[in-house]
Each structure stands twice: as structure tokens, then as C-alpha cells.
Amino acid sequence: MSERLPMIAGNWKMHKTRADGVALAEAVSCAAAEAEGVEVMIAPPFTALSEVGRAISAGPVMLGAQNIHPAEQGAFTGEISAAMLKDVGVSYVLTGHSERRHIMGESDAFIREKTAAALAAGLRPVLCIGETLEQRQTGQTSGVLTGQLEAGLAGLEPDDGQALVIAYEPVWAIGTGQTASPETAQQAHALIRSRLAARYGNGLAKQIRILYGGSVNGGNVKDLMARPDIDGALVGGASLTAEDFSVIVRFRD
Ligand code: PGA
Image 1 (tube, rainbow, N blue to C red):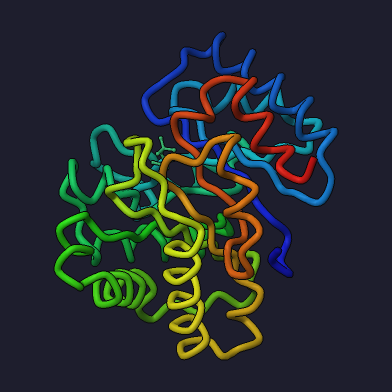
Image 2 (cartoon, rainbow, N blue to C red; image 1 turned 90 degrees about the vertical axis):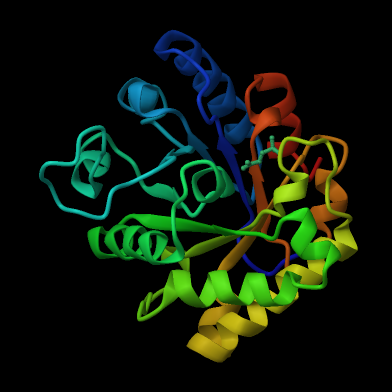
């Protein structure tokens, strides 16, 4: 079990209307209120952020956004700034999710700008990194993870470990039902932590949470969370129903 405060985060992706989101958020709040020693975050779509934020404002669930634009404001049709996210109560924001890297074509440089903008605004970025199946099969996993991490954090100096969260999300495990084994995930997490230590020193690297994402569910969360460098989970599919997500939130039971 990790020495850091575990975090269970739900990435709703492009799911949930406002009413459905509020109902789910209320149920997640109840589950989180009963779970001790875990921080819970949910990331609804932009359209539901405000209402979901109100529904969970009494705590303990934190509000996350799925995306951010690095500019403060301007002519960026369809985009959302850090200030707009803060205005509706957002604390966390995903950057570098594989769906944005691979479907929307976001580059490491753009992801770095987003991560920087989030940190500068006092939002906590969850920087997602992960290799594709082909990259894993051709022995490129370490290089890809190191490259995405270094590029995503280039020049950035979080002054406190809570400000930055990393998510290891192997692309081949996302939405496929094919979870990385706890050993495979732990190996990747240990590598990531060693790179963080090289960059920020051991003290800060030990505070930064590294979440695992990729087909996490109620049946595999405990084994994953038992590993020393796995500090939480970023959950997609299983975050969409209160029943499934509550089991993950209560992984200690
Ligand atoms: P999944 O998605 O849990 O449905 O695999 C995880 C993610 O994309 O963050």
C-alpha cells in the first residue's frame, strides 16, 4: 500500500447529461463520505461541471475537468480556460489523456502548455502518460513513458507534491477490459517515480501520486492498490455507475 493519500478518480468522458450527472455525483458523495483515507475526484463533461460542482460542494468529492486550453482567454472557439474551470469549482484537470493524444492529435508540447497553465492557475493537473500495445511489444515502454513525462513536465517546478498527479494509462488497457497486471503496473509506476526523483529529488517524488488507469474495476482495484507505487486509480467505464464506482472508492473494505 502506498504511503501517499490514495486517490480514486472517475473520468466520465463524453457521458452524462446534467440530471444524470448530478444523480451519479450524489451517490458518489455518499460512498466517498463512508470511505476513509481516500480522496475521490470526478471529472464530468464541461456541460455538467457547474451543476455537478454544486451537488458535491458540501464535500468530500473533488471536481475535475477533462480538458483545459493553455491560453488565458481569446479566440479559441470551443475551448475552456483555467479561470473558467476555477469559476465552477474545479480543482483537478486531466492533461495528456490518450484519447486526446491519439484521437485529437495533441502533442507533448501542447500537453506541457496545458499542464503549465493548470499549475500556474492553482489547478492540480493529472498528467496522463502511457504506451500503445505496439510500443510495448517492441520494447519501447520505458522510452515512451520517460519521453512523455519529461516533455509534459519540461521546465515545470511544482512546489508541492499534491499539486501534480501523474496517471499511468497503458493505451492497450483503456476501455478494453484488459487491465495491466499489478506487477506490470508497479514496474511502470516505479520507473515513473524514479524519473520524478531524478527531476525533482526524492522528497518531492515521494509525495507525488501516480494513479493507474485502464479497465480498473471493483474486482481488480484491491490488488492494484496493494502495490507500493500505485497511489490510486483513474477510472473510465466503471465510474459511470454509482454501484461500480462505489466499490472502487471503498477499495479498503
Ligand atoms: P477505462 O478508462 O477505465 O474505461 O479503461 C480509463 C481512462 O481512460 O481514464
